[in-house]
Image (cartoon, rainbow, N blue to C red):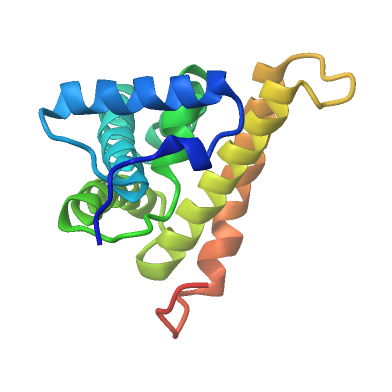
Length: 186
């Protein structure tokens, strides 16, 4: 049952409620449609985030292939997460209601990344596993970077480059494991 968004029971301070109401109003202006539930707002943000991130990835990977494209994609993901942290978080949330629009946006991003991963020698479920690992690496790294929680890190850029080097160096090990027999989610 759809109900109007009531942010009063979600947020505790007047500032948080005002911010949430402003976001809902902006979404309604942007889409031209009334947002009627928090779940719908989350789905809208996730779809927009997937599209924005895919545009960034396509631009970063233009005229690149294989490991060069993968490295460019990893950097584009990090910069997107740093520049648009709320959109990045919304993008990688599982929706409370699955829709064709959400599934399509997710699939386009997944297909783009699995194409790059296949150029790196990873196919099928192995490529999906690598994408999950990359997402986790990016999300975890950015979380530490934003919170400035690395002890005595000389440079976040250098540290991230090292993390991507380790990720790429581990791809042959992941490929050697072969595809999972079960195709369920874990």
